Image (cartoon, rainbow, N blue to C red; front, side, top):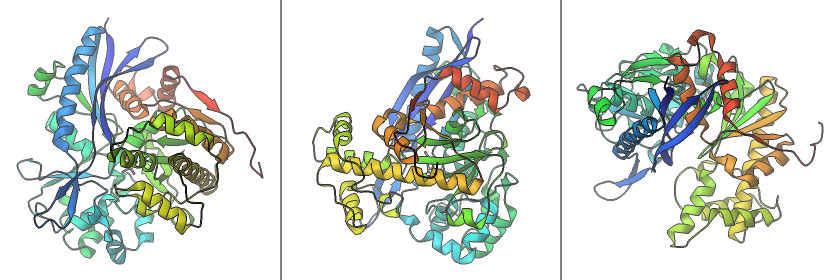
Length: 500
Ligand code: LRH
């Protein structure tokens, strides 16, 4: 019998990946093999007149990368004697494309870092107070949540002819199958969902229609919601042939990358997680949303997760800050080695400069070292004089933010947090893991670097019955596969914080 395998398309905000997940033996374990990786960054597109530039996603380059990755996955599976039984797509949240009546994409989707969002949230809050929105959608304030992007974009060309709105992974799934759905974990990042009911919120949509110019017809653009694990359809015939994969089922996975990543964290009661990549998503997994006023003012979000779970977390600006610094230094033509910089940063004294990395000033691309130094100066901190000192300050600031969020999440949700699991690219950053253990005073356990791809594969494997009768395989069973597939290490806190 041939070994089952699944293709995970995992699109991050700085790179896209196509991974083949081969499901081995007893106990079940997933081996991930990379069959495609392509850089992916928002592209500034100037306007006629030259004043402002729009930040757009190059979705066609993504699509080309995905198709090449699928072909390679087919070859890789054949070489390993594996048979591909599914494809699933996850990506960064909140961004969307609009389709016209013929199902044609209307222009390159905007990036959530596009400056048009500035001020849009405040305009929406003026019509629908933040507290009213939180009571329904449970989302932290982020200036780029889909609803605010829509408010900023409703006057743009294309809006009038739009007949459907698809979030990025649903758009790719539509291109793979011809079918339009809205997968619920990612839909929960739009601000348009009722976090308790896991349905589009009629109340919110009606009020938006009344309060925000241009949004009256929004409800008609939204596809039907599906839960992760739903088979959307077979791969379209032309693609099935080109890729050599045949008419395999395309499965709606937990299509928000963070939802897929958290599904692949071996959480036990008391464990917090950090999904550490471009963003750091820091929080807890809960059974029900926390919609209290205290939670809202602490800016915690209730995004929806796999199998009825809630991701109770805050966005921390993440490795974006570090990566943007490195990009800026490389722009000047220098050969900057991140490994060397991190080693030097480890040798710097810690705690000299800690800034609030979540400030909106860090959101946009562009000269990050200058912006970080300016923030340090404004906060009365020691301004880092060298690159090593600056990298150390960025990591100290991230670790301090993680510690704050973990502590507050525990308090607000009534959970005694005893460990922190880290997954994603940040697992490779040993200094950051060590500083996180020190700042939180908790053991830090590292998991899968490609956690989102792993979670993506697991949901597909369950959906098509490879892990047993789908209904009898819960999140706990999926996480047994995660444990069997991973090789964790633990960073012990060097000191116990006061009060513990
Ligand atoms: C991480 C992520 C995060 C969102 C952001 C837009 O990739 O999906 O969960 O807040 O991108």
